Length: 67
Image 1 (cartoon, rainbow, N blue to C red):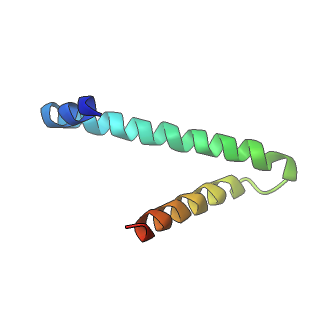
Image 2: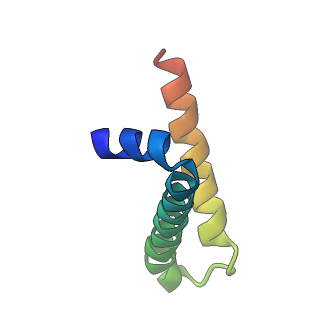
């Protein structure tokens, strides 16, 4: 964690690029797992995206309520 803080202060552009790539890869991985789980049910192609977005909203609301 100290590495990321030091990177943020010394090279903010590189920090933003690393952060963006990390979030993008994590989102793609979540979509892939959701597609694997929902694939056998024959749902439409947008269903995994909706499932991931709903899960992210639920997590965000729980974090907000815990404060």
